[in-house]
Image (tube, rainbow, N blue to C red; front, side, top):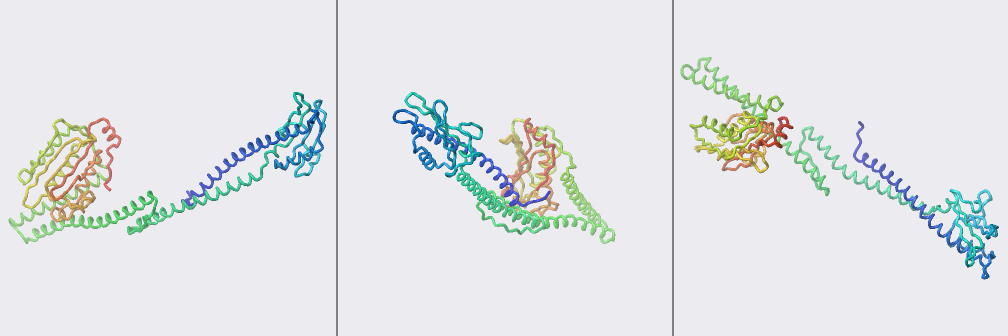
Length: 479
């Protein structure tokens, strides 16, 4: 498909539509001018016929052709601005022709071949008659015959109409041309900027000082997108370096420890201790690789997610209880707050457990040094009908500048980076699982007094169940 610029595309089509519209307006205007001119001139011709009928009646009431009748007709032709003098015929009561003045154009008689027949009515001719009366007696008839094309001929009006229509067409085209050029300029600049972004140059400069609100919003949004892409690209480089380091560190440790045992650098209990450390590093490496594989599988849509109708109260209570058994000897206190009435939600119980366990583990990792962590798990139904599971802790919180990136893949905050080893896929994977079930995972708030995460899942209502069913539990990639 041949590509054309906005300027050419819209100006050509506007001109085409404008010309078509002006043709229709011209046709309607010409028809109206012709009909109104014909009506006016017929009225004037009728007045002329009545005046001639009045002039040929003598004071005694007889039909007499006055000598000044020719001059009278010529004078009335000038007064009425007739370009064509009608064919004037006067007949008596018996039909005898008493007077006949042939038609003329600008004072010149027409040749006999072009003279309209007296008192003839055809589609091309218009005949106006007036009775000659004296009292109640009809003495004769005055007939004025003119070609219809003469009565509707108004060249001045047509020239004025043509001038107006051409002027409208020219000014309309100029207007749409200027508007299209004004609109296409920022679009063209944004297209050039988008090309630069596609080449990896995110430092685009666009002038957002424009009056049009839509164009201003579009330019500002594009600049924000470019800035965001630049930040994400920088984060990606840092995150990739961190992931590489996290995967390389246990491999290096395992290699060094095994080499020390094999070479006999250590023996006895110390060798066993080295082997125990090696197993722990291998388990940590296996855990990170498993997280990476799970994330890739879910991101590609390979992992199946169920849509069962679940008892929210029982499921949340059981997950919190099982997790607390593993941490019963640590400084962790888990409290659940469940509604008195049972709630139903739609989802996959094993995937919900993965999400909540990850949130609970993150709360433990946010524990302040030499202090205990208190976690409150709350189940409730929101005002919009969705089921919300809230996990609130009293940890150190997430810095404000990091809150926009916590769901990005491989992102790890400064505090967590130095305290806990991992790939930074936990929250990313959890959000993807939540969205795959038709819900979402959000950070409601985070301060130095703690963080609050909210898992939203559809309830068991028919309306939300149908919405989730339509989605077919497709994985929504995290942006």
